[in-house]
Length: 130
Image (cartoon, rainbow, N blue to C red; front, side, top):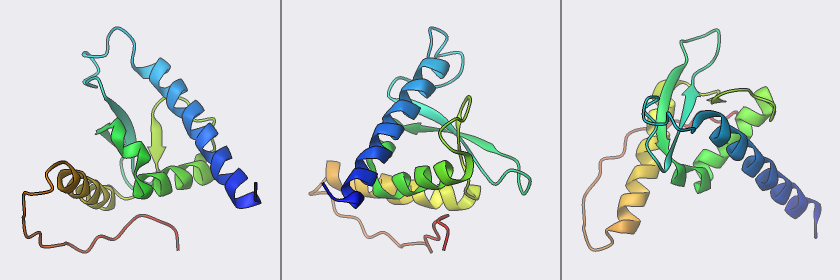
């Protein structure tokens, strides 16, 4: 196994651990009180110190999307895997919404392959470090 494959596998192992710690911490019996439906998770988005962090409730399916994985890697670089509480994504809120739009459009296209829409793409500036 090459070093790139080991690094990729290591990231997924850490991601799995991070998700399970988050899930145990935030999805107890009072799940409905916190506004997090089954199959979803809450994350905080924003650059601490530059803007107010905003809470998003997102579908768990986002975790497997390459764009979201890049955001999680940035969170790892910024905060490490020892975050307590909600996962914080170091990304401007509007940029995160653009990422959500891309993921949602792709998911819709996969789930409805015969339903054709013409989407006018916005500038999808991702919150990924250069």
